[in-house]
Image (cartoon, rainbow, N blue to C red; front, side, top):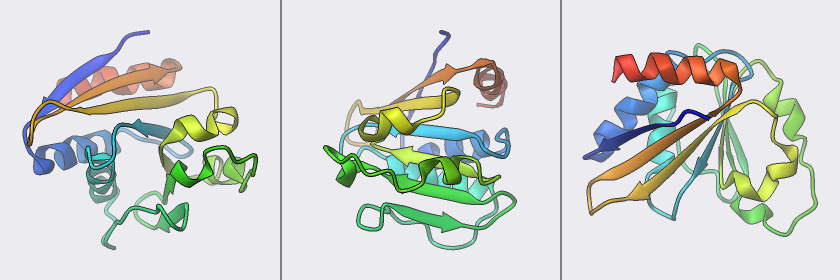
Length: 153
């Protein structure tokens, strides 16, 4: 599996990278985000939302589990953190196949429900402002997206 790694040096750069990725996404694409609390998963998702021309304020769906936004493609923003140790299926398949883009934070807690093809993104702290983002495409579609993203950023 080819991976792509990039460092961002501010929240704005992290959001810009998300926006650049959004321009390459298609209906039913699934992005999973992993990383510590406060590392920038929601900031990256805000960038995706901006790239999808979503004007509503994007916030973490920690307590609602799923928030939906409408843009050039719908955005299903999910936070599976509260689903750890839960066997509940809240209809993930319906979201993943809704014709929009799904971004899942804390995806390891719903691993059994994730589609076989997706883009896994791991975000980690380097220092107060710098983040390391590692993109791991799962499936040829996402390998192509990462190849295009390399040329954009």
